Image: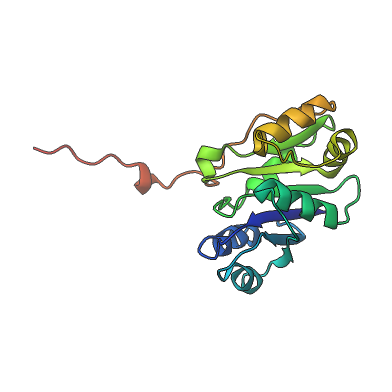
Length: 188
């Protein structure tokens, strides 16, 4: 099973597109969860309308990392399951999850991410077992200190013995149409 988790604070204008990109995956996640962190806009309603489940943070003072820790502490997963963590501004191309699953064929690889510049934010597919190993070693899934995010998680995963796949390009899938790459005629 793949569960996608999108931490969101006042992301009504972007979360719908992130959820839609997950529904369009050639190998879609079984669950899409939006973790609303004290949103005061229509984030919850937009996420529900887009087909996501919504969880609400409780007394979270640690922003994105705290929201992810609460979400990961809530979901029930089997050791072989996977978690896709992505920012609400990420719109993954349809074949991204299928390519990420291929990168995880090596059982020693704990995570594969998308290049942040290619997708507008952070997206990473992580083995649940790897996250549990981090939790057992550090008492949390995501570091709530000054060094947070994908870099910190990568360091934590490596510290507990997991290898990381090189980041995948999140380009659109398939070859470009011939018309899309035809050069413009030179001006005379």
